[in-house]
Amino acid sequence: MDTTCTHCHTPDPTGSTLCVHCTTRLTGQLQQLPRMYEALAGHLAPGSGSGQGRSSKGGPAPLPVRIDVLDLRAEFEAVCGWLSAVHDARGLRAPRLAGDTLTRLHTAVAGLLAHMPWIVVWPYAHDLATEIGDLHRSASSVVDPDPRPRGRRIGHCQSIDTSGTICGAVLRLAPGETVVRCDWCGMSWPPATWTQLRAWQAENAAA
Image (cartoon, rainbow, N blue to C red; front, side, top):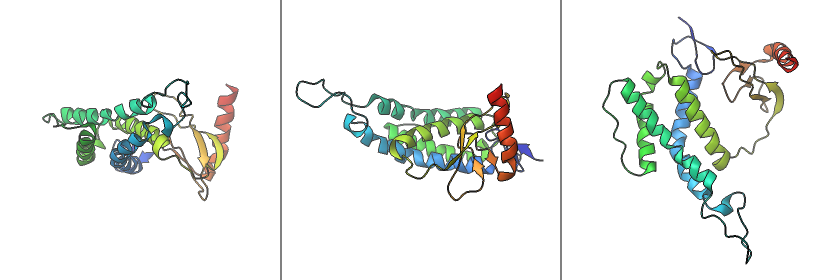
């Protein structure tokens, strides 16, 4: 029996909480997190980002690290928390998460990937996918800024979640693509839906 993916709200024939597309994206994001955590270390120095203070003689001394990047690296501990939550939900012994942050991160990622067949039917899979997606997006904005053309703006995504909230993320048609896919919720908007999409956008703007 078809169900609806709790993350992107598209029909899913597998009966899972997460559709195949969202599961594939979550898996890929998890696999990239350890590399991103390591790469963020190269952006801790103030000179690696926007300047803080001045280096000229007599000016204020720069901060020893970029606080925004330091805080972002701290957020990676949430991955360990998710593995603990999965173990608790499955009635398993708490995972052994020892060593430094990078070692624990590798352990947590490997553990979540091993549990993925169960996670895709877990009621909290959407929350996991959302938090990992947000973390991946934040880290990417620092270590992997996308140099590609952003494409043509189509407007704002009009998909509605289970609470009745409109997504509202900016939609862009990527170069060479014919279907717009929301980077936030994963909803697909083929050309046949664009007329209705514009109508909904106009209604919301008027409201």
